[in-house]
Image 1 (cartoon, rainbow, N blue to C red):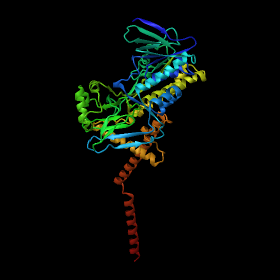
Image 2 (image 1 turned 90 degrees about the vertical axis):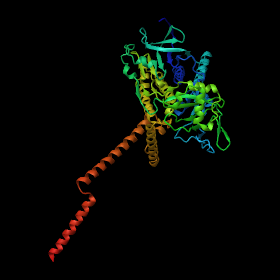
Image 3 (image 1 turned 60 degrees about the vertical axis):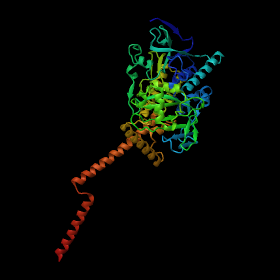
Image 4 (image 1 turned 45 degrees about the vertical axis):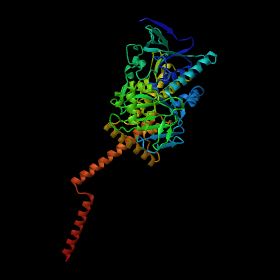
Length: 549
């Protein structure tokens, strides 16, 4: 296959290639191109468009204190825009809309301040808006380079898919990346000293590292480290697709009045369906833009009825029957949206997975590869930590690379430091995702409902225990993760410590019960032994008196 070589190294400058232009990839590029790293960065992205609104992929992110550790490092270009474009959770309303249309009003839960433990203000922002925000920050960086204020630039190559990564056969301080532009049979060969794989769940960069053939000149590389560990959870395999709902739809309250929804509120819309294949509820997350449509994610089992309906009008009728309060279908006013939604294939929640290996470096230590984001940890969106964990990876990589300037270490040592710090976090956040909140989607199977009851009892018991001991015992992990001063590893260690203590107490109680039960069968109880002893002493006393008379 013909290819053209594009050497992106510059005399006296460090160069890097970031594969993937999602939030983690753009954040990594911005970090690498800034002080004190000053890499000349090229981003490769397979999609031809990344910032446009996609109705079928319009998810919302909640950037909490963990994710803001990155945004605040770019206070003027990233964090300021996040505040402007995102919706703060400091104040919010949660409105529950019952299924029965005859109920006179909608129960409203209002919160003037976020009461979750030690949780700083977080911001809701659509995925495409977050991408735009990061691209605007990159534009600011490149503008400053044109003006001569900084020396590095960031080049974004859209429509370029990476399909191979390997060491340079001639230069041990360089790594080749082979990319293929869309609609072009030829390939482009790029090279750089640092490659960052931010290419998601099915990372091509990670796949290449798992193949030993190309990296045999890197004796320290263990390909087995890059084989993904996959785990199951109650939410793995659920199917999801997005329905676009009108921002200000009307909610009939049952007493003849109409309540108009607001984009800044949470909504839980209950349906009349309770069956295994038709049970459904709609949850709307808040949005700052009150003119844009609201994305409602529908999450069900793969055998749910909505996946069997392929006609837009039939889908509209099904929703009208399921939500009789909205019998007119006024939530969705665009008839084309029903047709699009009915034909949408959606996607599946991925397994909870992590990659033990986060980096690799050349024999000389001058070239290396690092992984960030979904390339090292991926899981269903149960706990809302995906993008925040990815930004945490970028911050950890930033801290590790700063040691190259401060401590005069080479790239290999910096990447090893990154793996040492962030590797346990990747494993911990995947464990947290498995137990955090996997039953929140209303799974209708009997086993799911039973599991939900046990999960709720566990959360309630641990919360009660923490309250009764004035915080000596930790909160449940799903609540403890909101303590942004704790790492994911610390959260899981505290949860595991309480689990171990409870198991020891339970085992001790069982041992005591077994001992008591065994004694009751083989020998008289203490109470019975006391009675017998007293009876014996009385008989001896009576016998003594009779003898003297």
